[in-house]
Image (cartoon, rainbow, N blue to C red):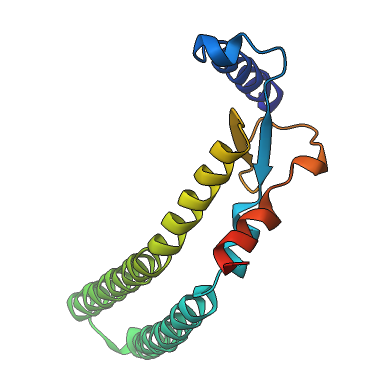
Length: 177
């Protein structure tokens, strides 16, 4: 199944290269390059601060998540210890109470995850835009038809000429070198 998807991707890329404007398709040599956007992003000015902010936010939320899980575990242990002493109606009410507590905890965990992802997008989006702008400028300057991202696992690249790696060029541009 995966080989078929890769084969389809290769065919789509080949077909896509064939439908470029006449000036590009008339050339006998279509020029491509590639970058590793993960490497670029991690080395960009401002990434460490953004990453540190997200890590601190995750650490605080992990502490809260651990506390909530401990609260639930304690409530379950208490309920298990009282189970034999309770009448069926009280036991069912206690079970419903535990289920409600579990549901509230799960909702809070999902809310925290959503907050982290939103903050991460907020901090990283400007860096990604800077990176896109630099990559597009380098692509245009070098007359490349396509720039692939080798950090993307769905890329249709099987082999690359390392001389075409633009990752360091993009980093130098972003650093102002």
